[in-house]
Amino acid sequence: MSDEELVIEFALTRLDHPGLDLQEIAELVVRRLGTERMLEFASRNLATRDELRGAAFPCAVEHVLRTMLLLRGPAD
Image (cartoon, rainbow, N blue to C red; front, side, top):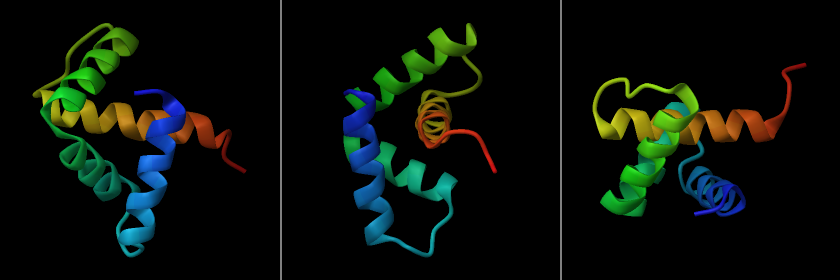
């Protein structure tokens, strides 16, 4: 899944659940996309951090959050 596709999935999920914070949205995205994508995201997180911190699901969520925050740009 490309970063652009991930951004679209995140945005659509956020539209469906406007009251949730970014962490909760990322968790929903990972759950919606299934086990195969979860493992893909966890492996990308492993490549980025050069370590696997915890179980695959939290690592996948961390990757989704990192991708969203990096694409969003620097904080004002």
